[in-house]
Length: 545
Image (tube, rainbow, N blue to C red; front, side, top):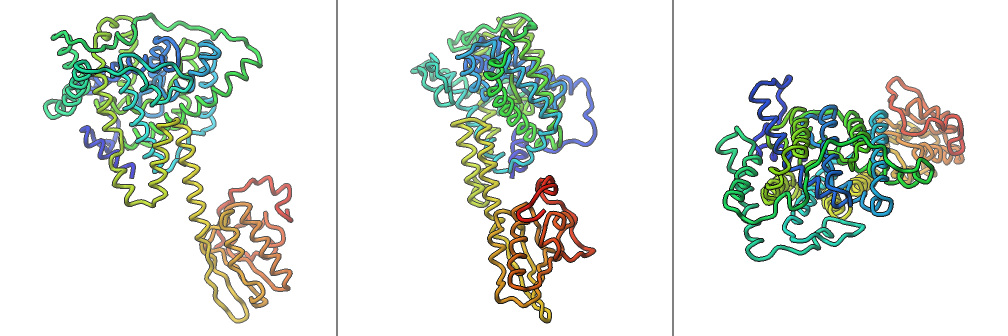
């Protein structure tokens, strides 16, 4: 499902959905494409970094430094070339309460601890658990994030921002004063023109990335005709120096630790979830696999360094990553150049960048929204199980109303419960009689959800004196399954009847007590292992060892 969606997106932006075999050859044309893609990303990073800094309640340079440092380090050592990282709104909305109550120095200390936690997640290879995220959750994540990106752009149509709030969600940010009359019409016209240029440019030439062409032409029109519209400089000045090493000025005591740990854990989790999902999405487009643990370490190193250089921390950005891919960026050079261009803007080119109209950048981001949203999900939802369709909608809504981490967790839990419920109804048995022996041929997994159904399959009172339970087409999954086997064995023993168990694994034999003595060994016994704690072998399992 998601592969076809992303392949369709890749077709729309004129890039191959399949990865070419062999290493990419660097030549003058490839270097030009990578550098132009990086420049396009850097231009789009500026207003977002400034906006997210405002959301978090810190100075604009704190967001810009985070975009530069996180972007540079993850581009160099990250798990997927072509991904872009920087300051994000998903993290900013968590940071605002910490900054409001304790100040920016506690934020820097929290970002350092956040980075350390992410490094540990990479070292212990926790990133592999992202594979447990089902496709409906991925589709909901894509759609929800596209909506959030789109809503964030609407703030550029306001003449004054929304009042400060401790919970600046996407909709709360839209409570500002809106443009009216000719000013609004001009802004909308320039946004539409930018989007049109991005759509038309690839049909004319591919020498320049379409987003860069759109930004350049619209900026030239605005400056040449003296059109009065908001520019990057109207948000805040981006001029500054090199980020300086700075140890967070917080007391090194238990109280500080108690303050920053909860925020660090939440930020680390949100950052890794968003980064790993973006890694999967970019990987689908480029047909690349792996890199989850490496990306965890890269994000952790980047945030640890950022905390010591006055940055607000960050993670992977799906919007900017899609801009990079759309512009032709395929290697680490595009991400590195984006970070270096951003630094150059801060140090040398702020007067030039500050005159770029926000309408051009909004147009670029709206095209990202159109390309990111999984439009095929509307058709897909009519063909897949209703519960999967509900999960797509649920994750989308929670992503928009709350945050990404909660949405993904909710989606995974609902999907897991749905699977457990469906699997619990698949336990069944076919019976046959051989002489005076009745054989139960089990079908379906035996686990906590199907344990009751398993017990109801047997008619102990009516069965003959010899009964065989064959697990060849079943699988014993957990401790609840073992308990159910013990219970049915005890019932046949109490009735004075002989019970035999076939095709159970050796680990079942070791974990079962009474029923384990009834197992009939066979050469074709399965050899999988149960997903239970093997420490139970040292203690008791139910009534047995």
